[in-house]
Image (cartoon, rainbow, N blue to C red; front, top):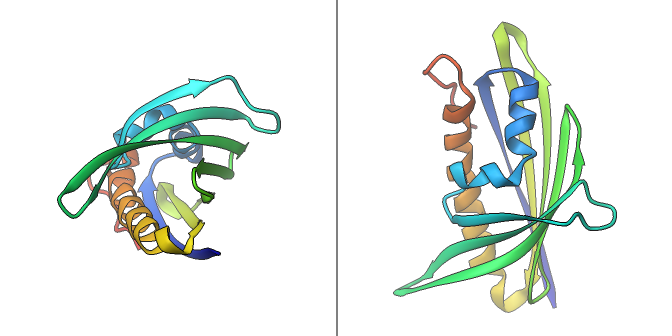
Length: 155
């Protein structure tokens, strides 16, 4: 039986929408931001995707440390919207839907919704890892994009 849940966050940064989209739409640059990623390799693009990758993560479960790999596809990579789906055995997927919008005073608002689906026995661990990693990514994202050295808060 599969379980599914969603979480979201918002980041504001002082940069252009184009700069934010360029960073978020290129998974080879996610190692700069995502605390679990240790390696990203671009693959030949799968049908229906804009770009395809294999990603290696380093995970922990209590005293155990292990590596895992999964495939990720960028499905939409527009100036104001990015959609990615990552898939890993067994039957685990993470869908990232990001919307970008220019705001007053040179700010960009980045709204991210993450939906994780996994088998019931793995769900709690996988969802916790995804949520923790993406909230850490959100903090790093604001700092990476901010062009003043003083990033706005993450919500």
